[in-house]
Length: 375
Ligand SMILES: Cc1ncc(COP(=O)(O)O)c(C=O)c1O
Image 1 (cartoon, rainbow, N blue to C red):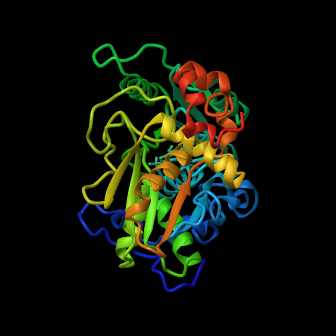
Image 2 (tube, rainbow, N blue to C red):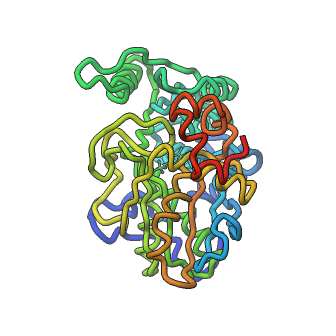
């Protein structure tokens, strides 16, 4: 565990009694699992070696080309380097470990979560190592590729085929299904990522890694939002270390997290159809909404300028920085969290025919995309 000057323990929430600190007494326990006596509850050997030990400590890259001759410096936190391919490996592991420590689960139990993507994959990966059964509740919008990945990891995929009859949304239907599975399966446990403080607490470490690498000099953090786990964990870290960093939340247009009207969205990962319990007023200094097209353009820009094949929300963050750049002071140091990698988007963001079907020929011919697209 790092001995840097930045606080890694007992962090207090600046704005509410409902703080992460009430849940996490010692953040070191999160990532130094071998120090925690859970030997009677889980195969400790599996935690001291193997795939889960390489979650976190992802690279922080300086990006020199995506904004050529920029007046600011930009660093990318490459969460796509986590073994399950995304930022969600961290909360998946942390939520399960805290549940073990609290005695909420034991090997052989069943984990249930509603997720159509990265969290499900992170939980499937960790469940395999930890001897848990995992049921992932999905809906028809989940890509076949993600279903294949979940099944390859050994997850049981439970598909909700009908939306909620009152709202017409799949999200409440998926939560109903989770609740009925919890009732019918003994020794089952729902991580409930939207409300679970251990989701957010995992990102105290993410922020610690960024800040330590930059020796505390960070002016802006650009962070995508979905469950708001990343936003909340990073914001709490920044506050408890009294850093001056401004936090720019990047949300999807059509998501309701920061208000606004719900609308159809094509790019998965970021955005939410309801306000997560983890969101608190004032976590972010500013929110920028990005459209599906902003994400597409940002992804192609990253690929052609930096050779980084990233997922949709990373493209959204790049476009958000582009929109904000005239307000960024000279020599400012900025960091962006790149949540996942692009292979899972080859049939969408990186597919000519998908782009044509969803945005029309006009997008493919637009100057915006043409200058970056190589497909
Ligand atoms: C690709 C991607 N971007 C952004 C997010 C949002 O992260 P969080 O849930 O921590 O708000 C997620 C969450 O699943 C994601 O998978």
